[in-house]
Structure formats: C-alpha cells, structure tokens
Image (cartoon, rainbow, N blue to C red; front, side, top):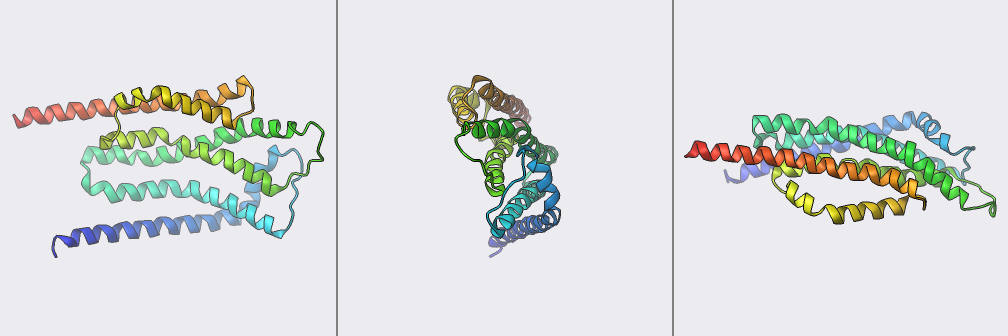
Length: 244
C-alpha cells in the first residue's frame, strides 16, 4: 500500500493541475468575450469592407471563436508552468532552471507564429482567393467565413512555431538528438515545402516567404538539439569519470 501512495498522489496532483489549467482557460475565455468586440474590430481590418452575417448564430459563433483564441494564448504559459511544476520533483536544480525557460518561450513563439501568419500570410492568401472570382461572382463575405478562414490559417502557424521548444524538451529527455534531426533534414524540407505550396498562392515569391521561416525554425531546432546533446554527453562523461 505504501508503494501505491506516491502514485496516487502523483495522479491526484496531475488531476488538480489539469483542472486548474481548464479553469484558467474558461476564465480567460469569459474575459476575452467581454472585450471581444475590440478583438473583432482589430482583426477585421483586412476584409476591406463591412462583413455580413447570415443570422444571430453567426455572431455568437464568431465571438466564441475569437474568445477561444485569446484564451488559448493566455492559457499556454499557465499550462506550461503547471507541466513544469508537475515534473520538477524529478529534475535536478539546473534542469529546473532550464525547463522554466520553456514557459515564456512557448508563449512568445505562439504569439510570433500567429503574428507572422496574420500580418504576412493571411493578407496574401485573402487577396489571392478573392482574386480567383475574376469578377464572375457577386462577393458577399460573411464574418463567419472570414474569421474561419483566418483562424484555420493562423492557428496552425502559432502551433508550428512551438517546434524549437518542443525539440528542446525532447532533446533534454534524450528522445531526439541532432544526428537524428540532421538525417531527417531532406524529408523534413520536403514536408515543409509541401505545406508551403499547399497554403500559399501559386507564385514563387509567396512560397519562399513561407518556406524560409519554416526551414529556419527547423535549423534552429537542430542547433538547439546539438547544444543540449553536447551538454548531455559532457555530463555523462563527467559522471563516468567521477564513478571511476
């Protein structure tokens, strides 16, 4: 029974932290909903015209989506901190300090990814898609379609920009190393190129504007993994010498 108690305490602690994160998400969503009209006006400026709605349900749907994105941005550092507190008993003092750096990094990279997609990629894609009409259609853009298109494009980039931090974490655990990432470079570049070509207008400049940041992110991830792996090898060698 005594052996099971730590496991039960571990599960209880994990449950408590999950509930805390969910509570922060809900509270953040409520707060964002109170100011969602300001968020709406700030994000609707790329539409070029007043957006239409098809019914009262569209208003609620749009406001909930925008509030959810704002709540997600607020909750990410809280969730990262709770993960850090959950694993910190198993870490050494130096590892605790390194792991604590993940928290602001996750938040900043998520915001940077969203900003890149919103200010660079979304206007480019939006103009291209509207240009496909070529005067053949009477355009009536609904607010729901506009924001759905925006969020489907921007959210994946916000999450994709978390790649360096994820690689750093997995490298600390020994799951990834720079040799493995370097071997995966060619297929990774191919996947990134496919992603870039798929989500951008069919012109060379647009593809380059998207694929270059993605490749830079991958190379940064390899550099991070190389640094962490080198530190791990050095620490292992020092430990072996001390044991001898």
